[in-house]
Length: 83
Image (cartoon, rainbow, N blue to C red):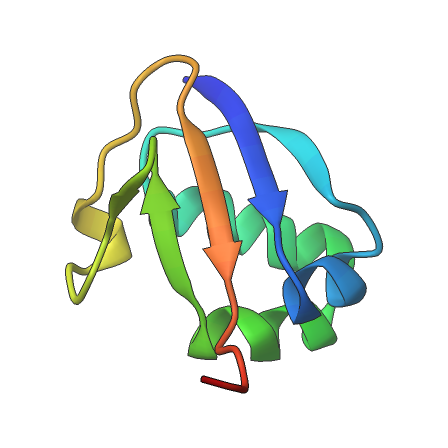
C-alpha cells in the first residue's frame, strides 16, 4: 500500500520534512522505514508519539496490528506542551 506520512512539531524537526510518501502494509513497517531514512532522532520522537490513521487515533493498539489502506494518511504527533 502507498500513502502519505505527515510529521508534526518535534517529529517534523527530527525528520527534516513535513510529509513524504510511504509504502507499507502496516503502521509498524511504515514507522520503521521512516526511522531508517531519517535516523535515531526521529526514532526517539516516534517512541513517544501518538498516531492518527486517516484521522482516527491509533491509541494503544500495537502498530504491527494497524493495517493501512491504499492512500492512507498517517500523522505522527509527538507530545505537545501547554494546555
